[in-house]
Image (tube, rainbow, N blue to C red; front, top):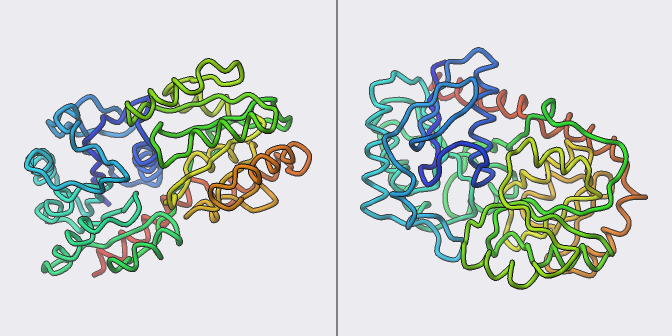
Length: 356
């Protein structure tokens, strides 16, 4: 198949990635190409995906800085975003794709993707949003309606109240590329964008409460919030802000950590960092939020506690070194979280669409 993957244009695809959705697009493109498909990624200017052709959309991500998604604001429909996706999809128009797979959580991308003549898939990487649901409802009435996918069963159930979901295409990680260690380290890790919904403050409290230091990895996605976090914690000797780093560097640090702490304060669509941690042999302590219950094997690769229960998460963190076998974490990732299985599921959906 000839497949075009449309990435969100709010950031170029390059290390360090701004978020998990960007990392997934890169890994998916590589895995689909490995299965013999002709894959291109349409992305913001300056993007690079090793081993895969990247088509420059002609859009500078800085143009869309004001359109960056905020969990308390939802999706936005603006003239600037519409113009950017109109340009990007004009680039896609003449490329002869069998399938165009949109990964951008933008109303404009929903409206414009059907103009290319390809079969269209929209993957929803974020929680339910009325504006996006309305846009999907409009394009569903087109002569060749798109397929809509979510990234976990919990995510699909949440979106099911807003629109029809055709498939669950769980995210995956390149397990073979992630090294792992059998011995636990002495530091906890938080990995995620520095924005309110990711629970970075709770992560710090959980680690310090368990007597561990914590390394915080992630971009200042919400600059004001990130500055507040630094003001609160940067003077503490057990707290280290490491910024955004390449994925390979993050994987090395995960492999050396006692645990990943994932105290998401929203319904986490999937939980990519938790999947990466388990591939690195590292247990996860997380809030029981959204798709994390499908990523973490409770009691075997980590512990899930009620959202907001810092005390329970602290107690769980104290136990992970003795209660969780790191080899089980790695095996779970190999069997259930690998990008190869993700690519195969995408391939099946694409083939079904092309059969009509």
